[in-house]
Image 1 (spheres, rainbow, N blue to C red):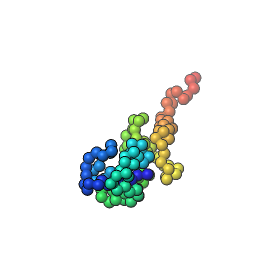
Image 2: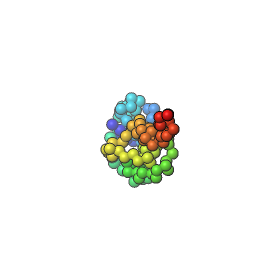
Image 3: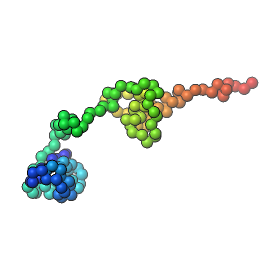
Image 4: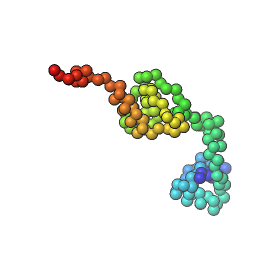
Length: 141
């Protein structure tokens, strides 16, 4: 769970207990050992520690313009051939954009495909679209 720790000194910016405060607060995750130790330290002292409502925090960040919402599943497919094929280590988003430019449509729009699934689909599609060499396919007489 995440917590917002507010320093005893209003507006404090600096390090305490191994974490960096900015403007008097820091967000810590109790599932990260170093942050859990710092959290225990702050609970024993004059710091205000409050659990974070992530949904509310995200809404505030979006409203402040600090975050933007991008849903890969909501993007309009690109024109065929308009997206460059990503390198094998390209991001899942790049592979999804490329696959969509080739006609990919997820079976379940709520579940994002993995990069490996997208690469497999692309390879299959590219193999199916590859021209057949008519000289090699005919039997010699």
